[in-house]
Amino acid sequence: MTIGEIAGLIAALAFAVLVGFISVNLSRLSTIMKEIRDTVQRLNSTIDIVTKDVDNLSIEVEGLLNKANTLVDDVNGKLSKTDPLFTAIGDLGVTVSDVNSSTKQLTSNLLSGVTKKKSSPLERFIKVTRSKPKTQTPPATPNQSFADTTVNISEIDSESELVSLTKTKPSSTAGEINLK
Image 1 (cartoon, rainbow, N blue to C red):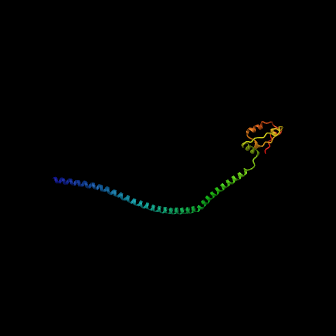
Image 2 (spheres, rainbow, N blue to C red):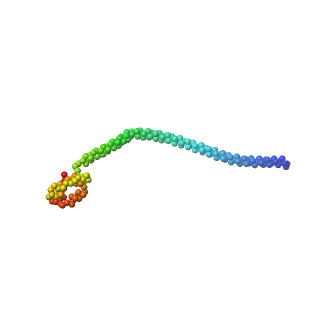
Image 3 (cartoon, rainbow, N blue to C red):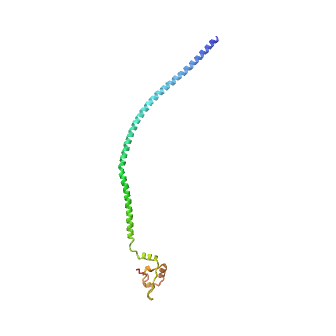
């Protein structure tokens, strides 16, 4: 065999290996293409199902939105009808506040009128003892005891005079005080 024949034989063998390699790869490629075709078909059928579901869902959502709009309009209408009620309640609160202040004023006026009553002798005695002292006159006659004299509360000076009154000799009318 000559060198040309050997070169032709090597080229033929290389070509045969190349054809075998390409045929194996093409057969694998055909299986992959078949799987891709099946996947695309399943994807198309799934997309069709999803599209139908989305269409049905959008119809239901549109119906719900229409009902929600109707409900909101109804609630707004009813709320607008309650505005006068809340206005009346606010006016009632102002009126109650006015009545309370009027009642307070009336009560204070009544109490100030009630407190202008005649003071009791004890109240007058306490009031006089707290006021400015005046001088006391001794008994007119020497036989008359100090306790027998009529004591004018307005003439009682202070606590010291009250103490001096308690230290005097008791009389037959001891414990009696005549108030003017």
